[in-house]
Length: 252
Image (cartoon, rainbow, N blue to C red; front, side, top):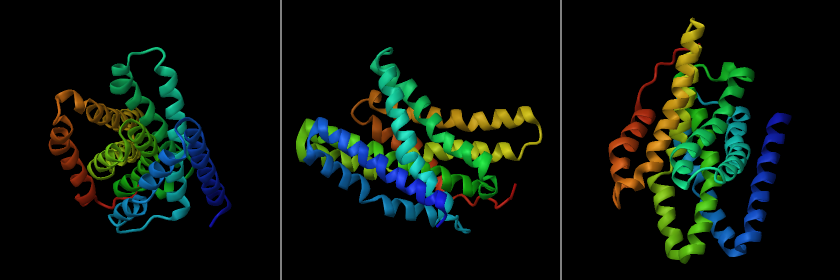
C-alpha cells in the first residue's frame, strides 16, 4: 500500500470520527452509535456489488482515495456550504437547487483530480462508473449518519429503521449513480479532439448528475408515493442500465 493511500485512509478515518464526535455533542451518544452502525455496516456489500461489474479490477490505491474523498472531504465541504447557503435561500431552493449543485461539484472534484493526476486509471466508461460510484458511496456513508441521527431524535427506533429502509435499500445507489454521470461525462470528454466539444461533453455529464439529483430531491413534492414513483420511472431504469450495460472497453 502506497504512502499516499495510507495517508488518505488516515485522513478519512479521522475526519469521519471527528464528525461523529461533533454530532455526539449535539444529539447524544446513542443516536450517533446507532446511526454509525446502520451507515457503515452495509457499505462493504455496496462496494462489492459495484466492483464486481468491472471485468478488469481497479487498484485499491485509487479506489480508496476516491471513497475517502466522498466520505470526508466532499461530505464535510458540502455540509459547510449547504449550511451557509441556508442563511440566504429558502429551504425549497436549498434542497432542490443548491444542494444538488454543491454536492455534485465537491464529489466531482475527486474525478477532476483523477483526470489531472491519475488519468491512465480511468480509461473507459466502466472505469468511470466504478470510480464515480466509489466517491458516491463514501458520500452516502457520511450523509446517512446525519439522516439516521435526525430520524432517531424525531421518532426513535421506528423512524430510524424506516429511514434506513428508504436510504439503505431504496436509495442506496443514488449518490453513486449521480457521480457516475459526472464520471461518464469526463471519460467521454477525454475522447473528443475538439476542445469546445470536450468542455460541452464534460460539463454535460456534470449537469446530468445535478439534474438527476434535483429530480431525486423533488420526489416528495409528488405526494406520499412520489419517492416510489420516481424510483420506478427514473432511478431503477438508470441504475439497471449503469450496472448491466456492456460498456465497450475502449481505452483513451
